Image (cartoon, rainbow, N blue to C red; front, side):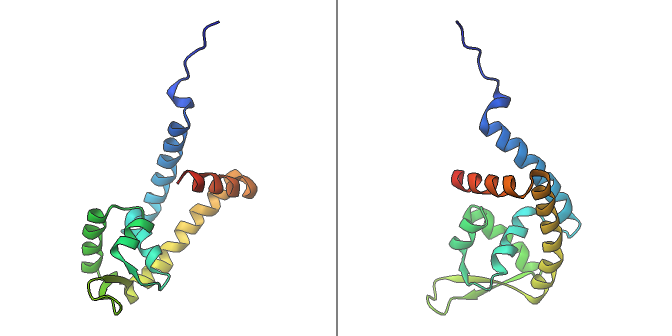
Length: 140
């Protein structure tokens, strides 16, 4: 008996990418209304915790490579959303902080991001949504 080859659409990696594309497209449209892209939103969310993050820590948390983060931060500084501060602990390190403008914008943006999250949870129902989040965290 010959085993039929699995089509690529049945691969888990394909399903993950298809879901990622759908969710990212929707989130990007919501953020576009605020003049922001997804990577900048992730950076702002990371910085909104009042935690002093180095560029390396921020790159890891915001899922960006360091060169891309540097370019993004330069743009965000010029837009007045974040500012750099020399670390009091280690003068070689630079911490990034949201400005007051960045905090105000974050409040507006967060509402749209949370609306999307609620829509996803409703689509899956809360139990399945939490299960999916835990499974994806394992993969990450």
